[in-house]
Image (cartoon, rainbow over all chains, first blue to last red; front, side):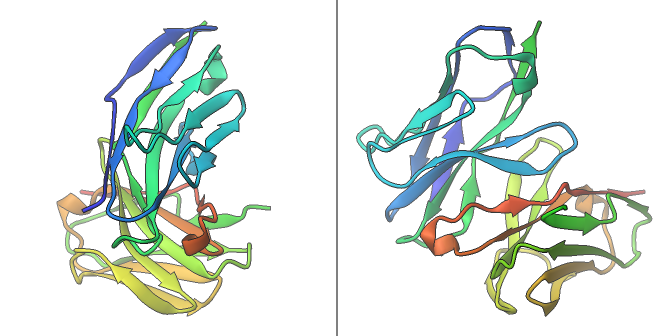
Length: 115
Length: 114
């Protein structure tokens, strides 16, 4: 079945460091890919998405490119801030597969940014 | 105004009890969901409802029953609570998941079983 694998955390960085969180997926259909962020004590919020191969999603300085050849959707940010400390979830929605448009999440990666 | 609101935020109860968690969305969305997040932050979908019709029910014990009195509400009722039910439960909604509309999440209900 469909699945999402993302790098395990926690990831600890200093402010202004470069961030990469790896995400790869397995899907039987034509997935759309998402990154969600969960700040402490809150629900998940959509950070960015890409719906087809080679699309780049971006928001708040974060970017991720849909790479079909490597089945990846890595999250990057050039200069992280303390306020970026959160748990980041990679997810897919496979309209052509068995998930019927529902989201399948990776296990989450906790990011801590130190001043 | 909160888009997806769920109550209570915290729920502490004993094994064997029956409890409900309420969820309301004011976004006019057609689809609502319940997720369970375990202590390791792993999120798994439990149910989704589209126009009051259950469209997915993953391998969830039948002690869990979603109830949707109308399109804006999807409540979660749990019978005979067990220790393993301790988790954070999230409600979410979306307009059209098959068109990749984003899901909007509530802030979660932390359920602790004593």
